[in-house]
Image (cartoon, rainbow, N blue to C red):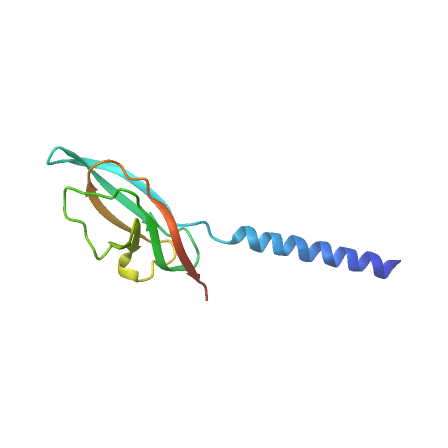
Length: 121
């Protein structure tokens, strides 16, 4: 009976540990947008993309439907891949606890994370 109890305790401990590891998996990139002025009669927005993870994010892609700006976009930070999918940071990594940002002018965008990979050492 003692062996059975030890096995049950071991299984429960492992299950709790795995649950803790799963919950530690990083959430997708944080996306925020803030007003920063007006140009050509359109609202200017600063969009900040923050990697809240302890790991580096690779090949970050965003879904940005109807993306249109009356000002030039920094294509080193955000560039169209196909359809409504955009590459972030020129395909370069976004390191742990860092941010990249871009500015655009027009209607506020519905920006969502499309794809990314975590690289943890």
